[in-house]
Image 1 (tube, rainbow, N blue to C red):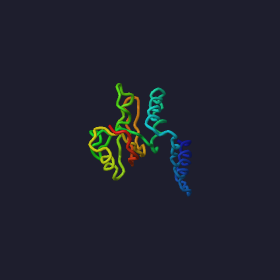
Image 2 (image 1 turned 90 degrees about the vertical axis):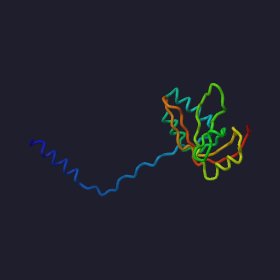
Image 3 (image 1 turned 45 degrees about the vertical axis):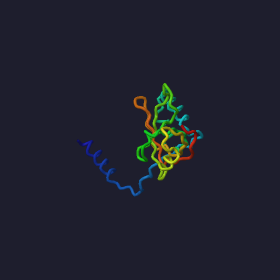
Length: 159
């Protein structure tokens, strides 16, 4: 007891001592550099590499927040409204190499632009630009992609 009492007093004194310095600011999040190739094909390669190497976090950090320009297929049944618009990131093939159906969070007026461009066609190939705002990937679950502030850039081959 005689030895613990001075130790306790010392701990109490150091805990009560005020520190006039303001807390250090939190380190700023460092955004990854812009990608030279921000296509869905480049992302697919990185996802395949992550599958082999287990580098899910690195791929997510590299891609999330990036500006992308993708040519996708708008399928009328998957893009029925501005709030529920998914597209096929890759041409349909059997067996499918990638099964993503990115969700598009469209900039104001862009759903009308897509509808006007694609009309009633079941499929329409379009090029869009936006921010890859959400990327969920793992070995256990399917890849999930959300593009935000999406704008129609051009219409390419019509089907």
